[in-house]
Amino acid sequence: MPAAYRRTLIRQISQHAHSEIVGMLPEGNWITRAPSLRRKAALLAKVQDEGGHGLYLYAAAETLGVTREELVDQLLSGAAKYSSIFNYPTLTWADIGAIGWLVDGAAIMNQIPLCRTSYGPYARAMIRICKEESFHQRQGYEIMLTLCRGTPEQKAMAQDALNRWWWPALMMFGPPDSESQHTAQSMRWKIKRFTNDELRQKFVDATVPQGLYLGLTFPDPDLRFDPETGHWRFGAIDWEEFRRVLAGYGPCNRERLEARRRAHAEGAWVREAALANAAKRRQRAAYAAHRIAAE
Ligand code: FAQ
Image (tube, rainbow, N blue to C red; front, side):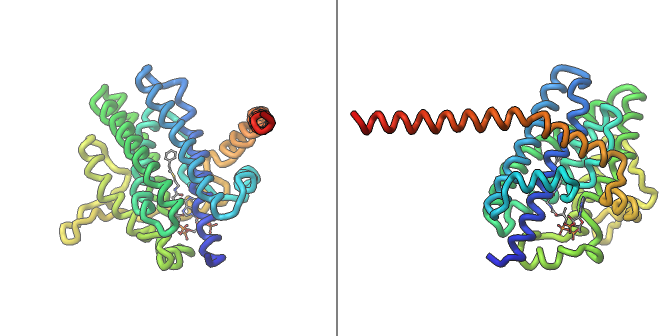
């Protein structure tokens, strides 16, 4: 395997894994405050799914010769990137609907093509992940639908969440093609099968009709349907904001890393106990094998 292909995969898969793990934090913030038992159970299951996705992806990255410890260190030291979207706060319950609808919706748009990416272990992990993400997207949209059919206050909450999450969701697809360092090479290697701008446009085309069905307004005065091309045209994205978030100055960057560092430190005893248990099992198995051989 060419060294640069391996490096690119480790970079992309590990950033993807970190995104899933850090992505548990904004929604985890609402588990204790979900408005009903049904909503709480669904949210708990969703956040747990995201943790599982992180683990499949770390395992896929490990097949390329990097260790889990190295990857976790890169995240905790702040050296590794994770998706910009998870540096925004979840202020109201409607944000949980907006994350499912928009963030999982954007994630699926980006990840469906990855089910056929050129590196098998990554592609196979993506198949299961996409099935779960599509369920997440529906639970988010259903929260939005319930709020939009509720009281005027609930509908206003849904509108406010759309206003805050729309532009950051468009930034999830990465810089415009003209500024994307890696797209051309990753397309040649068939790691990426569509460019950042192509996927962003597909997402806008799929999502705008869903928002209009909810009776919501997109926070973009330039958004209009172009009948000639069949696409929804959208206004300029604030790439300065994107660069600020990537540089560590988003609304929650510091809080997210602190939460991950704290969780890692507080989980040390779990890792120690798991290792001790594995050692005990190995010892017992060796003893049993020895006894059978002696009989
Ligand atoms: N945030 O040259 P490109 C999810 C970086 S999973 C932060 O275009 P590339 C599930 C990029 O890494 C969401 N950094 O790069 C969920 C590169 O930096 P580097 C994550 C970004 O790789 C839902 C530099 O900018 N999904 O949401 C971002 O060809 C709900 C130049 O960019 C994936 O990771 C960004 N938005 O294309 C979980 C999918 N965009 O490494 C919980 C897999 C770009 O040179 C709750 N990844 N950068 O230092 C990909 O498809 C690609 O890596 C892209 C970027 C499209 C993200």
